[in-house]
Length: 75
Picture 1 (cartoon, rainbow, N blue to C red):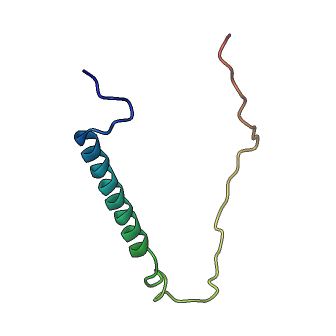
Picture 2 (cartoon, rainbow, N blue to C red):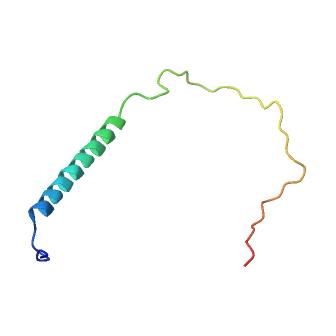
Picture 3 (cartoon, rainbow, N blue to C red):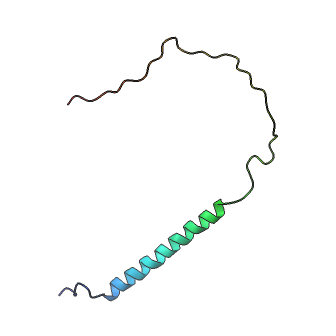
């Protein structure tokens, strides 16, 4: 015989409790990862600062340029 629709069996209660604790654990891992990724030192902390000269040695462009065309499969 099937249990009543709103009746909670022991296995259902155990499954819900397990899901609850897995969800809390997952949220805890996400929180820990978020806190660990914040802060720290800048990656460029020891790099020199200033204006650095840049020189373009050569630049080549095609004489004719065109945009790609849209294609549609035959319907």
